[in-house]
Amino acid sequence: MRKIISLNHVTLDGVIQSGGGPLEDPTGGFTEGGWQVPFRDPASGKAVAELMSRDFDLLLGRRTYEIWAAFWPHVGDTPYAGIAKAFNRATKYVATNTLTSFDWVNTQRLAGDAVEEVSCLKASDGPELHLWGSSNLLQSLLAAQLVDEFRLWIYPVVIGHGKRTHPGGVPHHNQGRPHEHLSPRRSARKVAASTGQSE
Image (cartoon, rainbow, N blue to C red):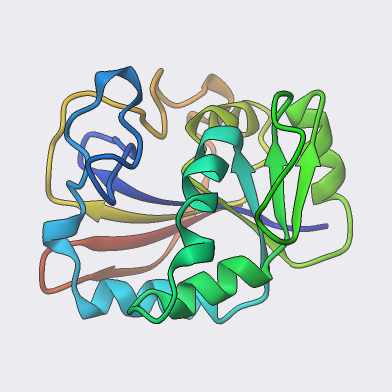
């Protein structure tokens, strides 16, 4: 059984859209992209680097895959080279009924019902599955109770609109469900790193 871990950079009001730059994901008229950038610091980078040193595969929705495939394979010799190497090495499982060809190496398509496909993938042998962004896919997997763990980097900023981790509130079956809160950290720039596991 493979663990599914949802990882996100998130604002205080739950927005996960386009944290890395203004053009990362402007869908829905979102113009506040890049809100994460002023808060980056070595401590936050170290936490991400620790995750990248583990064996993992990626689980992505179509939109997040398209954004990442246009960036990570082309990073080159930059401060992000280590992350790019880990992402390029990982198998990318993409939940999509529209994309049929993929230029990014080690990419596999999950077509049909996303919940059924991910359930089968979760039941297979292999490393843990890291789900970054992919807000629509995340909602489906949360509703099906397939997410085992959350890793959140919480930024001291409020956006007011945009794609969120829980746009309609916490699903009813998760209300009151016990979660173990593990290893909270805070960076010099007030970014709180938090891990929660379903019990």
